[in-house]
Structures are given as C-alpha cells and as structure tokens.
Amino acid sequence: MKKTKKPNNGFIYAASVNKKFLSGAVYSAISLKEYYPDAHITLFTIKEWVTDDLYDIFDNIVFEDVPNNKRTKLWALSKTPYDTTIYLDADTEIQHEDICLLFDQFKNDADIMITKIRPYSGKISEFPGGNLTDHCGMFVYKKNDKTIQFMEEWYARYLRQESGEWQWDTNLYPEELRPWDQWTYWWLQNKTNYSIKREFLDDDARWNFINTYREDETDKPIVVYHHTIRV
Image (cartoon, rainbow, N blue to C red; front, side):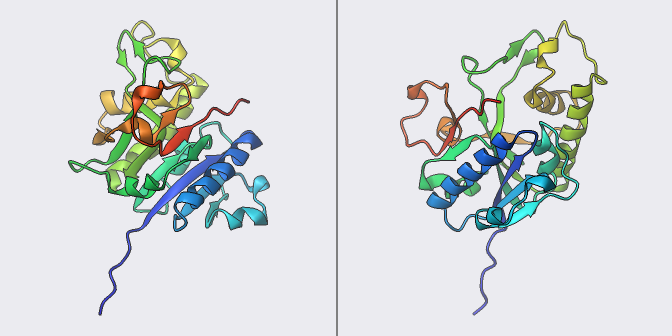
C-alpha cells in the first residue's frame, strides 16, 4: 500500500537585534510544541546566538547570511523551507491545540491568510490615502512564485523605506508610517503589481489575539496570544 505523502507544513520565527526576541521565540516555540508536538519549526537568527540547546526546540535553524535587522522576519519569509508556512512573531504564545488547524484555513485560492487590524489597538491605521487593514504579526502563506516574489520585494522595499531612500506623498501617507512593515505590505498590495491574493481568517481574533484587544473580539478559545516585547 502506497503511503500518502504528508504536507510540507511548518512554522517560522525570526530573532535579531535584541536577544529578548530570541528568548521570546524560544518561549513561543515551546508553547507551540506543547499544543502541537509534531510541529515543524524553523528559526532564523544570527550566527552568534546559535547554541546547541536551541536544537532541542527548533528542528531547523538558519543563521548563514541572516541580516541583523529589526525586520529580519521579512528577509526570512521568502526562504521558508515549507510549502505552507505559518509565520509567528517572537512575542506570541500558543494557547490552544487548534493551532494545527490553521494549515487548513485557505479559501478561494488565496496566497496568504491573515488577520485584521483593530484600529483602536494599533499605533496608526487610518491616513488620508487609505487605511491599514492587515496585521502582519501572524499569517499563513503558500510557497509559490508569486508569493515568494512578494516576500522578497517586501524586504527590499522596507530597506529603502527604513533608510529614507523611498519617499512618498506625505500628505496622503504620513511620515509616521515609515517604521512599520505593515505600511510596506499595504503599498505592495494596493499600489504595485506585486500584490498577492489575500483572505482573512474566520473569527480572526482567536488566531492572533493582541494583548490590547477587547475581550469580546472572540467567544472561542484564543489560539495565538500576542504579547508585546519591550526593548
């Protein structure tokens, strides 16, 4: 009898700049393993931080050529070893066994499944030229040519954004958007040909419950709780 090949699904974390993010990723991955022992997990981090004990938690660690940037996560996204990937911020905590069900949430041929920003919870969401709708701290995406190209451009454009090389009409898009990778994502999705097909997760708050959300955002058990790492 021929065995059915298991899907190549996995989770990725990124940790750089401050070791608090490595500690956070370790804590989050341990909580993930508690509720999903068979999870495949890859960590992207800088070489100087890699120790043998990390391999007890992460079954794959990428450190060669990893940039020590506050948005190393964007560099890592296109280099996922998985066909379907769940990206998790380092300040997340898994709180329910339904985490394994996230891989089955794709609908309408989407490339990425993501959660919605709550304007009352974010630093900035509305501006004269539009509004940020997608929260980029947890999402599920497929590895295909279009999506990987999007991820590569996300990092490349963010570097231009961070350095000040990329300028825009600040009457429509305030300068205070500059630090945020969610702004880069919004621009690519709404103003370029790099856009990929996005759908929102059903009952999305339980999949990415930010610590400033109101309790009534979901009536089901929270799966991913999003803390804030202070640096």
